[in-house]
Length: 234
Image (cartoon, rainbow, N blue to C red; front, side, top):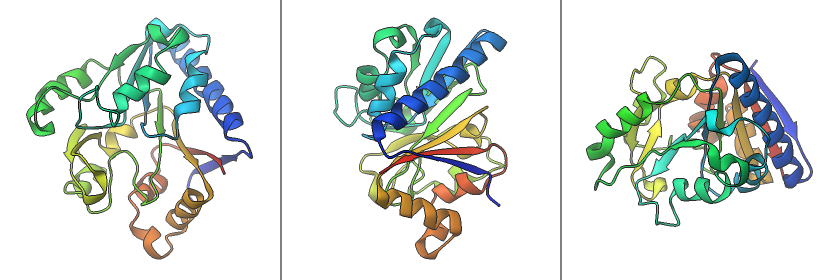
């Protein structure tokens, strides 16, 4: 049996509020226990309301580091930038006091910026306390895209790289992504999805049905290192 718990909501705002409350509670616990907390979040359109709710949470935000699970290799001025989204919707209100660690450098390719990115990751107080993943309709999560040029390396449970570049037909721009073993180095792991279509994709991945056997998100669902908590709304 897969180590997955699912919380379903009929209203996506209710989901956003509940997930924000849960994540804030875990960050408070981390700060109380270790004096700091590290949160990794996903981009895209799905987490916007969650970010807005979390930005108002009462906690010691100066002791929180926030980073991304992956990033498109575009400048922050681009509407495609995950960093731009996080700064506009999460790092506001109380959360403006958090420290943001981006996954982008001003270089033409992610390979050219990789050494500097690895130095930035070294500054994170790992392990993560909370990782919040999303999922695409093609079964990708983070930048683990079907057909990705370094997908096998990214999903290798014995891999030692923490961040790697990724290119895939479905990815648009080149990407940079934390690898699966790096993301599993966390005390809590969430998967936030919205819509009936994505729920069917997730079900196929969980059951290994048809194309679901090859969805990259299946690697997250099958691993036994950390439980996965799914938050879903239609």
